[in-house]
Image (cartoon, rainbow, N blue to C red; front, side, top):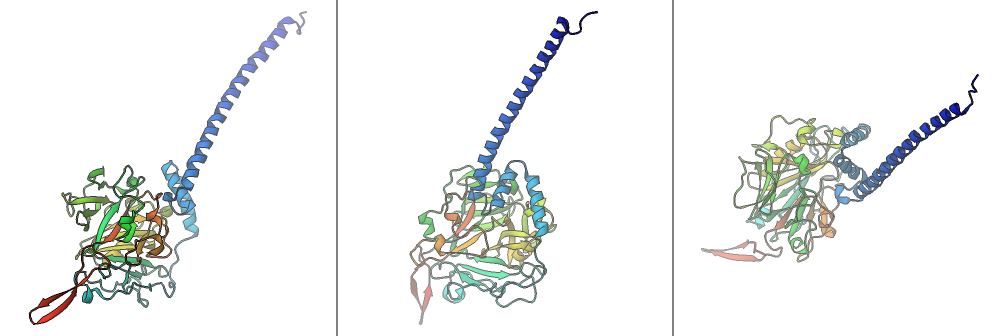
Length: 425
C-alpha cells in the first residue's frame, strides 16, 4: 500500500500552497491600488471642498458654500434633501407682527423732489401693503443715499410680503433715472470668462459717484438666458426671456427680449434671467409659487425664501424688491403694487440678496464704511462689491451729476425764478 504522505502528495500540497500565494498577492495589489485611488480622491476632496468653504464668493455662510460646491460636483440631490430637512424644522412663521421700528429708517434729510429738483422725477406714492391694516410708516418712501445735484435719487420703503407671513418685512428701493446712470459689473464666476471692463472691486473713480449697488441674477447655468457686455456676446441671448438692458446713456429698460427690448447700437449690456413676472402692470399668468423648475432652485425646494426682483415703471424709474419669506407670486405682486409695468426676478436665497446705498461726505468716495443695506439682515454686508474675491455680476447706480451742483437763476418777463439745475460733474 502506497504511503499517502509520500513525495507525490507532498508535491501536491506544495503546488496547492503555491497556487494560493498568487491570488493573495493579486488581491493585495488590488487592495493597494484601491487604497491609493481612495487616498488621491480624499486629497482632492479635502483641497476642493476646503477651497470652496473658504471662498466667500460661494456665499456668506459655510452651508451656502457647501451647497454651491455640492451642486457643482454632482451631489445636488443630497444637498437639496439636507436643505429640505432643515426647512421642515424651521418653516417661516405665520402671523405675528414685525418689530415696531421695522418700517422706519433714517433718511438723508432731502426735501421733496417736486419743489426743489425739477429735473428729477417725483417720488412714488405710498406703497400699498399686502397685509392690512398698514402699520405706522409702512409703505412710506424715505430718501436715502448720497444726494445727486443736491436731490434725492433713491427712496426706500418697507412692507410685509403677504397677508399671512405678517412678522416679516421686505424692502423696496426706487431709483430715479434722471439722476442715476446704470451699469452692469461682470464676474469671472458669473457670467464667467473675462476679463471685463467693469468687475469687482469697484474702482476709486467709480466709487466717487456711486449711489447704490445690488445683486443681479442666477448663475448662468440656471438663468435660462444669455449675457451681453463689452460689445460681445458672452452667452447667446434667448428670445422671450426677461432682460435688463443698459444703454450708452446709462438708462435701463426691462422687458422680454426680441419684442419689448432688442439689440441696437446703443445697447452696452444685457442680463437675462428667466421670464418676466410682471407684464402690462400685472403679475403674469401662470405664476406658481411651488414651481422651482421655472423660478429657480430654492432652499430645500421651499417656496418661501429670500428673493429679489427688479421692475421698470412708466416714467422709467427702476424699483428693486428684496427680502425674506417670499414666494414668486408675492414678489410679482409687490413689484406690480410698486407701479412696475414690467419686472423680472433677480437672485434668490439668503446669501445672494443684497442691496446697498452709499452716503459719503460731499467729495468723498462711496465705501463700505458709508454704506447702508436695504435690510440690516441681508447677507454680504456693505463691503461685498469692493472685494477682489467677489466674482459674481451685479448692478450699480451712479450719480449723473456732481453732488455739489450749482443753483442757477433764470429770469423771466416781469419776474425772477430761482431753479436748481444739475451741473454735469
